[in-house]
Length: 388
Image (cartoon, rainbow, N blue to C red; front, side):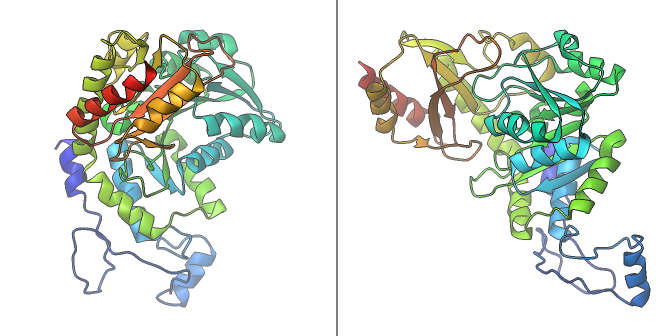
C-alpha cells in the first residue's frame, strides 16, 4: 500500500478496552492531568515504572500517541516523539544525544535558531561546535575530532538551499559511531527518506508542511532502532508533551499532505522556471532546477521538491526599491515560516562562517502557497515593475 493511502487510512482511533465508545474517523481529544488507575495494583505498577498504560497527563495522551504513530509510519523509523515546536524538537535532540565534552558538527546553512542555540547555549555546557560547509560531503572527515559525537545536517539548508551529500557523511559517521541528525522539513518524508540514506534521527518542523495551515507550532523527532531507546527515556524523564488539540489538528493535516505537496511543488517549479528567464534575476536557487549546484545530488536522493525556494537579483537594489517591490505584492504575506497554504516572502542578507557565493547579496525567499500559479505569476510581474 502506498504511503499516501496509508496516511489517509491510518487508524488513529483510541478506544479503551471494555468501553463502548463511538468510532469516529478522527480521534477524540483527551484533556486532563490526572489519569485514574483501574485499581491499586496498577498504581503499584506505575510507581515501579512497569505500568504499560498512560499514568499522567504528561505521559503522552492518546491523540498525541496517534499523531506520533502516524509520523513514525510515514518516516519509516522506530520511534517518533512530538514537541511543541520545530526548534524544540531540535534542541531536545541535542540534549538527548550529547554531553559535556562532546564535539558537534553543524552544517553552515542550518536554520538560524538552530545555529544560535548551538553557539549560545550548547557551548555553555562545554560542548564544542564546528560549522561545516553547507554543501559538505566526504570532506567532513577533515572536521572530525576524537570527541565528535553528533553531526547535524539540513538539506537543503535554510534560505540558500545548498544540499549535503548525506550518504557520504553518514557512511563516515557510522565508522566512528557518530549520531547523524537531519532536519528534513523541506522535503518531508514523502520526498526524502533519511533512514534509507543512513541518518539516525529525522527532524520535522511539523509547523510547516505536516500541518499545512500556519496555525500550529509543532516539531517531531524520529529515531532509528539503535537510538530509539535513548530518545524515549529522555522524553519520559523530561515529561515533555504536546497539547492534544495541536496533535489533533496536526494529524488531520497529515491526511492531505501528499495532495498539498504536489500542488506546492508544481506551482513553485513553474514560477522558478519563469524567474530564470527574467533579465533582472541573477540566481534562482531551487534544487530541482538543473542550474542548482547540487542538482545531481537532488536527483539521486530526492523524489520531489517542495514549494520553498529563493532568488537573487543581478542588481543590489536600494532598500526603498526593494520595499516598494515587496510591499506591492497582493498575494504574498510578509512573514516568517513556510509550508502553509498562503504564499509568503522574506528578503535578507545571510552571513555564513564558510565562504558563500551569496555573501553580500539580498536573498529573496518565496513560499509558494496553494493559490493558482497564474495569479502568483501576475502578482510578481506587477511587483517587479516597482524596481524599474
